[in-house]
Image (cartoon, rainbow, N blue to C red):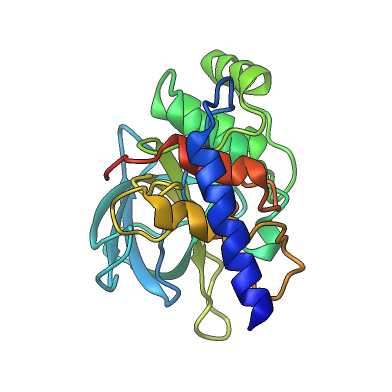
Length: 255
């Protein structure tokens, strides 16, 4: 009981300190984590013009950052085919900032950079995506604009994380429901990231409560039993002073 009081006292003291400091020259904060359903949903795809796919989501429960509806979609798997509408596919949705284990080493930062800095046609963009997301070996683009996108992304895209209001790729990871069922392409859809990383209690306002919550988790990293990445505002796998400062800088904002 005493240690909880001490932590609360420390958090409150740190909160007051952060609010009193005039903080300058801090890095721009990263985007918030998407709230996605953890149960399977259904996708149905058709050919697009603005993107490779037009992806329709269905069977999405209420209360999440995705809803039943139509999204721009892209292929990230050149080894399999995606049967088009009226065929449907069962998938689990993953944020590209928190991909499933076997995809964790793919260059999702570069894919997100491409989606937020589009150039050329959908085919140019698709080829650039295949170049960076190498699930089944390397891919060599054939279009000059695709190479322009690639060069720009190599120069500016490393470590890119979509911020509030930017596009975040959501991975549509297929589930094989029946033995012998054919492989289905892994794809992504574009979601506008409307979650603020600073409103950690998700009440639509960045207040003292948000700063205190982050401060109460000061020193936590993924090895801590109570680790929660929502308090790691700058996504460096450690809740530190920088995280408290970032929330304090946005004190008073509403969403």
